[in-house]
Amino acid sequence: MNFEHIPVLLKESINLMDPKPGEKFVDCTLGGGGHSKHFLEKIIPGGHLIALDQDINAINAAKIYLKEYENNVTYVNTNYENVREVINKISPLGVDGIFFDIGVSSHQLDEGERGFSYNIDAPLDMRMDQTNEFTAKELVNTYTEEKLHNIINLYGEERWAKRIAEFIVAERSTSPIETTGQLVDVIKKAIPKKARLNGPHPAKRTFQAIRIEVNRELEVLEKTIEKAVQALNKGGRIGIITFHSLEDRIVKEKFKYLSLDCVCAKELPICMCDKKREIKVLTRKPISASEEEENINHRARSAKLRVAVKL
Image (cartoon, rainbow, N blue to C red; front, side, top):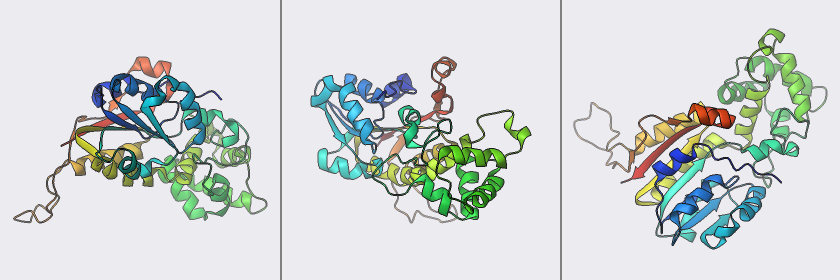
């Protein structure tokens, strides 16, 4: 299996995460191992990397790709929402860096049978963790029209979300929608021909929305950031690359909250919340890819990196 090893915003990630020899780092989204390899190069000698991924195929491929570092890596097949528990078990005294590269990886899109791609006809699946029971097929065939509309509108930012939801419900009333090809056909019927002439593939936004819902991507991200910060040593850094405006907004707001000393209402004469500032944000604005990187790796076009340091 060919895994993608082109890490997005690599130079910027290494510079801002600032890995040093002897440090302990966590890559919460191992994927093809691209970022992990460069972290390992910086933390060796004496350093150790904890590599998480919910996709066992990614773990197995990374073990081959990173074989020269096998004594410096601990692989854990789990969702990154469990990062605090993993760190408590493997490195109970804390770690010096925690890194996330959010979203679907290139190899998952390339694996037609996984059902992530709207360009390959395959069973509707879209699970990053193949042990989970809930699939895109179940979502498409059981969600109410209103719920379908809401997720396609919110997570896909799809202008034609309402029509797409209507057409999905109408189509499945006669027989279940079981493949990506069937779903693409329904989406194309729902979107007027003129609207399909320009822009990205007509199914892109809907597929993105379904994938986010199936894998609980935004929910997991939101509840994990604070847990990750708690596991950092003083001076440790957390870096998060996002590819969706809603993901970036979650990171921005969480970082802002964790960087505040008080969250009491302004009209209160004294602080009643006892909240303490936990991080300093190092990226006033998110870091985006250069034009050169975008030309080499189209996945970088929507990437945004935010980094903070534990106080």
